[in-house]
Length: 114
Image (cartoon, rainbow, N blue to C red; front, side, top):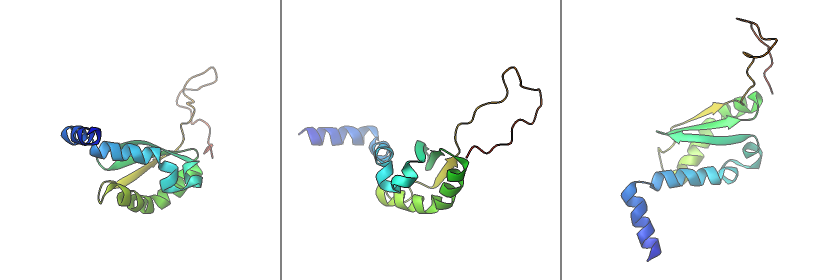
């Protein structure tokens, strides 16, 4: 009884895809493997675009190369064509625009953080 009511509620509101995507976020380590999951975090999913943040620029490069394989794996789980592209973004970096030693129009440090 409750299963039927819940299924009808999900169908009426069009939440099925959103629930599947949230399930992917929850099972990220299972889907991509423990090593990749320890360096990446899925952030958002909208209109077929999955945004994944990495903890270093080296992992950003690695995940960019693996993106087509991950798209295929995620589409196996979510249904064909659900994920069209994975956008890989690097780590959140400190800003060098504020502070006592900042310079106007300065080039800033040249570190890749990873």
